[in-house]
Length: 341
Image (cartoon, rainbow, N blue to C red; front, side, top):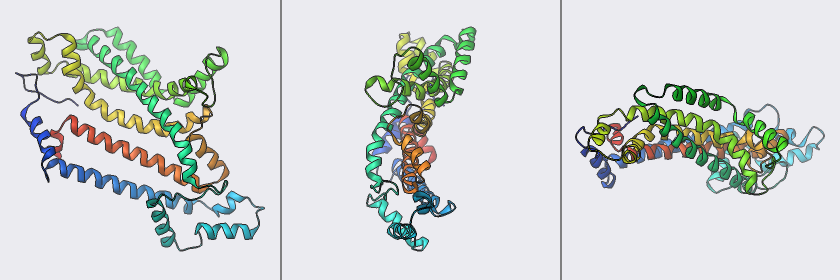
């Protein structure tokens, strides 16, 4: 998606300035845009909370008995069910569940008997660090690759470059991140012995898991940026900029790149959300001390309150990222807010 400009100028049109001005007007298009996005976020969060509540009740059998095992005394199981409120009617349980979330009470682990919030607060930072570094690396790799390839293949030039770039990006983009992680472990950890393959023991321990998460998304994002760059370079305002004999770096970086990144930003938001979810498998490949390994272990232990809250954290993170992407897109193209209004 590109942002058109008037033919005779390389500056944004008046409608863009009007869109930015509307940001300061109370009750204007921006206020209604913010209310709509906030409403969608709250409705989505409510649906997610309801789904995580239903999850523990849709699983066949007694979750407490499943966690404690078939040999656990019936009195112990009954006491645990009472302490968790599982004997209350479903509407009462739902009310307590939502009320607990609003007060920061995420429940208690069936296995460790520790607050779930304590485990999540310890395990969430390594997961966020892994996903954040992988996303930053993916962007740093994709933007230069997409821009340079787009410039080299514009107007039908560089057929071999386009073919080679397309082949490599498709192959890298289709390899599952956990499978790529296994390959990186074998090559750089087992065969060459250059990098650690498990745990978080220092800066070098980030290298392989970050690469596993970043390479595939970087290839996909680079393809989108290349296509958008080729399209933008044929726009009228780029011809005007060239006619004014502006330096190539100004044309490519100052005028073409911001418009080429508009569509890529939407995909980047989806990629960041998928990276957060994708850490589950990658963390287990590298024994990373994050939420990914915790949720797998909790599923094996049938620690449903822990699984419930981790799913909620992952889902809320993806919803928040999507909302922030919508806001960023609106800031890049304020006219979309007016059109939507």
